[in-house]
Structures are given as structure tokens and as C-alpha cells.
Image (cartoon, rainbow, N blue to C red; front, side):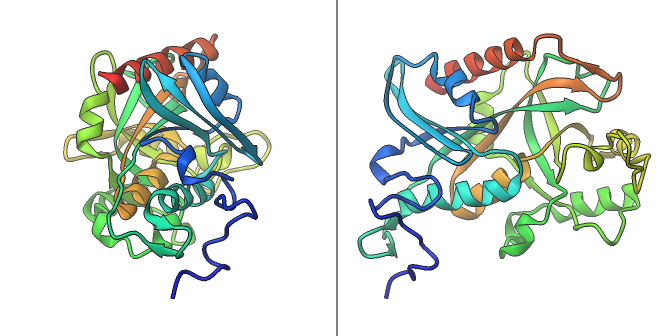
Length: 289
């Protein structure tokens, strides 16, 4: 008996429900971006685009960069969307849609996030790049899966103790990059860092407009944390979910972060589009090398 129609949802044309993709539309190397408009920002460098589809915040283009077939897909903001995108990407390569059963042979995808982020350390300036060696999820996504075997519990425990973590918040989880893919993407002047994945942009990242915070010192405590000679470098909203889901599903993942804000100094990039373009070009060149 195959996976029920209510669990593996397919559209009338046989495509996967949210992404509206068929297996033939997917390349083995995938770039994820948060902003749907950033898909075009990546594929402007492609030699050829063979397929495009838009549905909700999920915009996908598959094409060729210097002979390498690559899919670029937008996830929107947050790990709730990462849950959708990664389950459906995996289904496209590891489930037979005709029989609705997992395939006998597993296919592993290489997934690279190109995203924006804010640093919490004075040594990581705006317009620089951070590759996430470790990611810490302040969301609860991985707690809904049998995921203990992919987590780094000692790291999480040390952090929650340091932060005096409020018991009403989700317990942080910690996961690491795929080392092989990460080392491939890493070279100077990229910073290797520890990334926190937040559940929001304002209060959860310590920003105050009109609402007071539960812990107004949270970002200072985050910046002062040190474990195993590693410090937290930056904040964003998807990486921990990406690393966790990739490890659970048997895919390789790494997160490339364009630092547009420095929360220590209060500065923001004067030309964020240019910074993102530079990271895109760097990432594409690393993919093909």
C-alpha cells in the first residue's frame, strides 16, 4: 500500500502540491533563496533556463550555469516553509509518484542556501559573508520529528544555560552543516560561523519598535556565548531548519549568508543588492569548481 493521498498530495498534472514541480524539473544541485525575487537575481547569470514555475511564495527556475544543471527555488521566510520545501524536494527524487512508495535507491541532493543575515560580532562587518558551520534553531521544527540523532545536545544545553532560557520558549536545537559540501564552498574571505535561526524578525531578533522584549539583554548574551572555542556569529531565519531536514532526509546542505546588518554597531548595508550579487557569483563559481 502506498502513501495516502492526504499525506502525499499531488496536483492534477502529477506535480507535487506546493512546489508544483515534477521530478523531471529538478536538478541534483539546488540553490534556495528566501525572497522570490531573488530567484531571478541568481538565474540572471545562467546560460539557459529550461523551466519556470510560480506558486505562492515558491518560485522555481531550473537551468544551466557553465554546463551545470541547477535548480533555484524560493522558500519564503521561516522554517515552516523549509518543512514544506524540503519534504517536497525529497519526495520528488525519493518517492515513486505512480506507486506512491519510497524508491529502493536513495538520491541525495546538494542544497545551498543563499540568504541575508545580521552579524552579532564586531569582527564580522556588513557586506561580508558567513558560511554556517553550525546552526541553532530557536523554532520548534525538528522537535516534531525523530531527530535526536542529528542534533548536538551538549551545544544546545550550554547555550540555554548561558541565556537563562525562558521555559515558555521552544527548546533550541543544534545541527551542523554537511562538512564535504561546506568545505567545498569555503574559502577566503568567507567567515565560518555559528548561526542562530530565529522565529521572527523583530522581537525574536531583539529589535524594538513599540513592543518591549521578554529579555532585552538576549542579543548581548548571544554575542558573549562561547562553546568549544566557537562563538555565535549571525542571526537569520532558515538555516537550522535546512540543516536539520537535510540530515534527516539524507541530503547535503550548506548556508551562505550575506551580512547586511551588524547588530553590534547598529549599521546596515548601503548597497544590499550588490552584496547579495557578489555572494551569488561566489557561490555559483564554487558549485562548478
